[in-house]
Image (tube, rainbow, N blue to C red; front, top):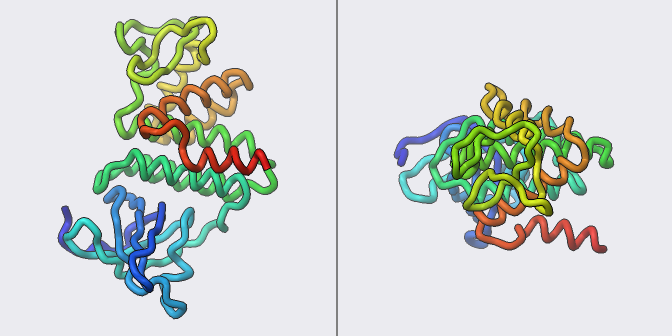
Length: 256
């Protein structure tokens, strides 16, 4: 664990908790140091320079120090570039943050994942009135795949997980917890082998989120729905919940 001061580190606030009457504990996703916890002393005071800056889904540069599990925030600067997402895009952003909080270990850097997250936040911020709903959905699926791969929870997508046999382009396969990728039963959500093979190739590219997003965006409605449902089951399984809090919130709002 680093004991020296870290300066000008690219970061996003994932969540914040009250620590005292005037201070906050922050869960922060940084590019070079992964997910870390910081105490922002005095951040709740009206005069604090931190107060207008420490917002979720906003690109920051932070400086901090300390050798305890919770380090001390020394400085934070908003890097600009886009406004806060609104509406369903904002809920999607909170959903991403919940996934990162549940699946990322502390102090474990994932630079490619950070870069993908930064791209996706820009996509969400550019969603005005649902005009980019299809792009937003494709971006979420791409990020889910990238996150699962980065934390070692996604099997290789061009072979059957248990047999290690190459998959066939026109055979239907399902991605399921514990069993990985296998030939689908008739009533299961599934994708053709050609789609799984393409997703494996895109995840291996130098810019995996952008490449995967492009492929997911070309899928027909049935394939997109099948991918969404399989990833939802897999993520819930690894997060240890039946439904993520942000997804339940989306359902409740849609019911209203």
